[in-house]
Picture (cartoon, rainbow, N blue to C red):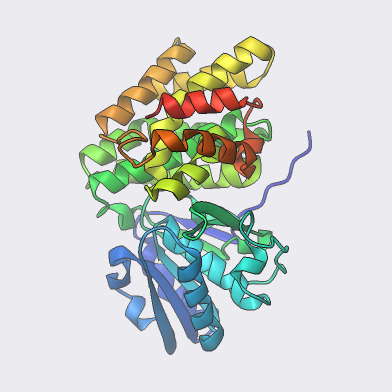
Length: 380
């Protein structure tokens, strides 16, 4: 048995713990950059952080121009710490700014796929990540997906130094998430537990985290969507998101995220919605491919366990699990890929992009072009 495990320097979890932020920030120094998404900038306490501060507001998923502008602001301010408050997009922006501000050159020197891909020096401004949604698990991951509007694709910055110094996870911060965001981000969290669990890169530690994340997400997602004030459900989803981030950072992802990168770049749709639209189909195609070509693949037994964790039925079949996934996506009103903006003429291009995506390397079986197209077409 041989594996590595990396995560944020510290993880602080629990309802009400956001009140500790000021004390944590004070330990880094007086100059603070705050990266906030949506209404997160209005949260109490942010306006009293540090003797000198600069607020960067984010809207939507990070883009190359947005990150470039924020990096320039950080290089001018020279903050002692960056505080990220918001969804995965705000946290990913902060992580990108933290490392790029301490490196030479600009984002195009280092970003994958559309840039030069030069490895980043392992130095970053410390980042304190405070998620206000339960989805990306970005508070414990070492990469940031960024949209290139020029190329119509999503590419990543990646470095171990991008792991936040502190992950401050307070489920109370997610109580105001509307149902649509709860569903979109929640499906991202659930996918990020399922894919690492069945990945060929999984290990005994990520298996425990991913399985517990699946179990909590299976009950918490619908409950949080139905009643946003249900703190127990919100806590379950915060754990699902956190455990998904811990798992994917150490055991990789799979076909859903391999496809989500090109499809998200083409459509501009929310990442979690794209994941939700394809999750049931990708599971079905993966299972069929393994039964056909690799019947001894250990991921088949894991998919069976996923079905039982999702349904709560110890006798559930893989078909039951796939049916459960398709049912909850429909119940929570997440649209298909066509409604999200993907055109029939883009299917082949999306499949080719997915097969090149780094996330696809974690899939439990290598899928053919035809199988990837089948996932897309059955998710339209």
